[in-house]
Length: 188
Figure 1 (cartoon, one colour):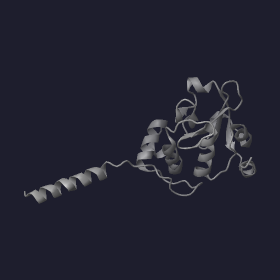
Figure 2 (tube, one colour):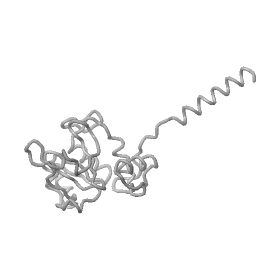
Figure 3 (cartoon, one colour):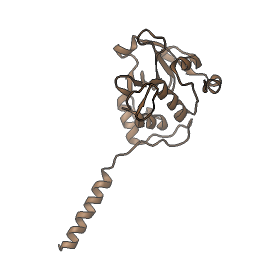
């Protein structure tokens, strides 16, 4: 093999190697409120985390959103990838995934839910906790199989089991966002 062919082969292998090693970033496909099929790698990842069959991960927009924010550090009042707080995460998730505008703070968000029993929770419902003796000081978004996503003050954006021994003792309320109240409360 002459030197030109050798260099050509090396270059070709280099290009193939780099193109096959790129990471598949989660993409928010569709429009807010639209349920789209998840990317295979996202469905596999979150099925494993939530302990469900891959076919149960159906809202690709939701899990792509979570994947983009996972690990983002906590920052009180934050609303970007440099840092986000729990109510900011629920605000952005509800807007970008479901097309629902909700108020900014947990104290306001708890007032726009229709209360449910824990067994009635469905994807997108809000779950509230009373930490440090403060009512409704933390909020998360219910996913499925007893898991919710939230912005933890110590670990950033993460998924936690609702019945986690540490967090469940602070669980206080949960429910679905009432559509009639969200547009009037969003700007408060």
